[in-house]
Length: 405
Image 1 (tube, rainbow, N blue to C red):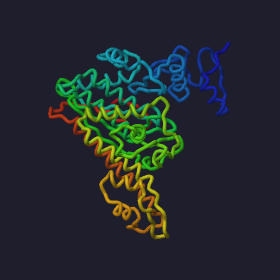
Image 2 (image 1 turned 90 degrees about the horizontal axis):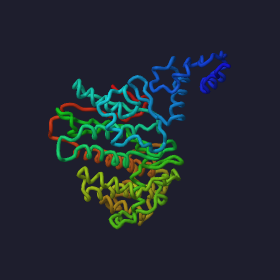
Image 3 (image 1 turned 30 degrees about the vertical axis):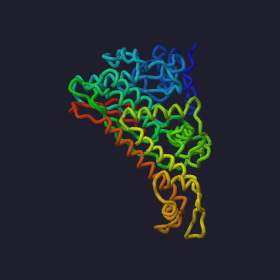
Image 4 (image 1 turned 60 degrees about the horizontal axis):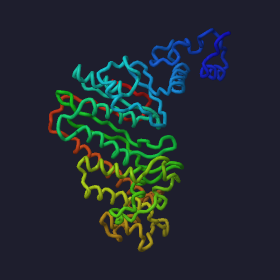
């Protein structure tokens, strides 16, 4: 009796209304013998097209919970949306020093290949981590950095590798948000260049960011959130040191309630803020600076709650003694009268300009400046006086491939 076609191939053939001729042990659509189904390298398949690739990935993931598959030097990763025990120090040690094809596909194998080629050929390397939202780009980039920090060691007593890893919770707090497809989606592009000395030990790092999604600060779609840091602050508003911020529940602020999804299952925002603050401290951003950052963030939330009423087509007004505008002014050090005038005064008359637009534009501008300030200070903490001999770059950016160059 003939073997039926792959389920994916069968559905595609039926949709295209083409004929399929059964042949024992082989699907004619993808021309893949049964013995190759579940292969750990897609280039070994008889024919490399969409049905064959999808079926092979499905078999590996469903039958064996294998989320990684090679396609030559490309590593294809499937996001399992759960924590798997495959990233511990014992796994890192198992991949250290091994050739890429000798071990099962893994992000650590790609990281080891980059590290080995840098050391052997003395050529700088880069890993590009790319994919659609929810594919797992940020986590993959984070594990690649963890691998380098573990296998290379540090060239100083300052534990540089810990500082490099400490940048992750900070950047996730200020640059990641919940979307409908991903609870921890990066809303910016990031390139981290990890520097090594002549003995190929980490000496420092430098980060560049791209295309921050500023619009998220003032608007979120249904079932989405603003940046994590806002919810971390609101969840921690009961702490004594945050009383001066005059914050409360995230549901009380326009900029954090529009998505109607203020809580992420399994995430404790109060604990997450502790992690963020510890990372700030490790990178040399002291308590005074941290409180200054939190004041600016709280000010943005208060500014979003300032209601501005139109008097006529050319003017608007903020009711006197607005408590949110008062809180904003106290936190950023400006007078109520000046701020009220700036928000209501139109500098350039256009058909679509409103005072609310001006308020939201100011909020986005402040957040973008704060974001850049944090990135700048993270880089200062990661800089080194030791001369850099080589580097490995890790790029976390939108796209469709995860490839090693």
